[in-house]
Length: 128
Image (cartoon, rainbow, N blue to C red):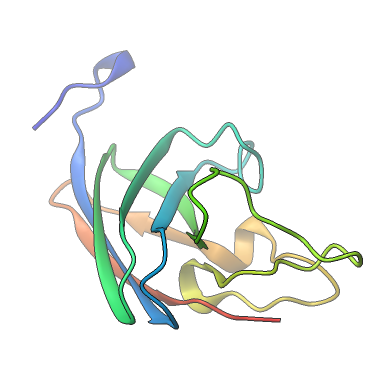
């Protein structure tokens, strides 16, 4: 296991991303604290080759309360392409399958607890 800044021991977090429509590009996952959720500055990021169905992305993250966000980066730009109305043009999802209500979910709706022995969460990509 890796030791991270501040002496926090990392735990393995497996993020199963399901409902992937195509094998184009990569599935990108970010695990964020409350103050970085929905921002580009999430502390932990990983990716896996996309494939139809589901993929598992593994990250080393300190135990604590986090929220995960994932999207399919079909063109490998590291950005979420958006429509004229600001809706994502690719599949996007959040931990707890947190609902979209006139915008992205809150940290409270997407948050989960990662214990020292690690964990596994599952989320589904949604398309607009």
